[in-house]
Each structure stands twice: as C-alpha cells, then as structure tokens.
Length: 172
Image 1 (tube, helix red, strand yellow):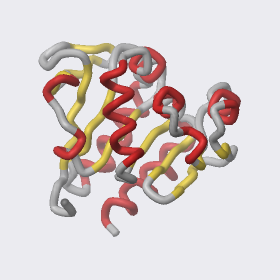
Image 2 (cartoon, rainbow, N blue to C red; image 1 turned 30 degrees about the vertical axis):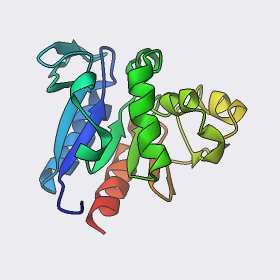
Image 3 (tube, rainbow, N blue to C red; image 1 turned 180 degrees about the vertical axis):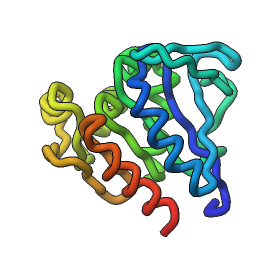
Image 4 (cartoon, one colour; image 1 turned 180 degrees about the horizontal axis):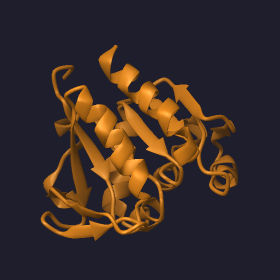
C-alpha cells in the first residue's frame, strides 16, 4: 500500500477553507492526491469563507482500503458529518485498522461517534477538547500531536507544523 498516493478527505459545507487548501497544497507537492468525499459525487460544497470545492466521490462509492490515509479538515463540516453513520463507519475503519489519519480543528469530533476516543491521544480546537476528554481521549493542548497513526492539530495557526507532520508521516 505504500505506493498508494490517494488520500480520502471527508468534507461537507462549512469546512474551514484554509484547513483544506493548505494541507492539500503541501501533500500535492509531495505527489499525493486528495479525493474529496461527501454525500454525492459532482456536488459543489462551500467553505466557511466561500471557497467552492468539487466533491469527487460520494460516501457510498468508496471503501477505506482504497486510500493511503484519511484527512478530516475542520470548520462546521465534521459536526455535520458525524450525524451520518456512513462517515462515522468510514472513520472508524481507519481507527480500528490503525491506518494513517490526519485531523485538524473540529475534525476530531468524528472520533467521538466511533466509540474509540478512549484509545486516542490527540488535540483539537479548544471547544472540542473537553468533548474528546469526556469521551475518554487523552487530550493535549499543543500545536501538533503525533500518536502512532494519528496526527492532529488545533487550528489554522498550527497549519505549518501540521502540514510538516503529515508530509513526514507519509514519506517515512
């Protein structure tokens, strides 16, 4: 699977624009391709700041094993996605298989619904940190937390460190 350069991105309306565009740029420079996954292929979603994003695949068209890693950007998107069991199950498969996952800001909200938060050491946006702690996760308030297969960050200010960590994890 190490030659697989395709990264799944779970996303919908309200994603924090820069939390998608900045990591996408960093990963693209290293030859990785991000596949934006939402409800339906072909739809255009809007970022919080108005950036349009084309969805390449619908959640019913993809399998976790098709991807090298999973990326969950923040904004309002993760909170919406965690209400749909298909996105929760997709995320849970990556956690259970201990496959590479990157999440920033509100992205880790999806982990709460998987029932596996107690196994995780991570960070998230300041208002999400207590929710993760209540779900049993070990939460650290630092720019980037690298814990086995999981890399998390708190907010857009952490993007340089986050991008460096995810690129390093994939190129090791």
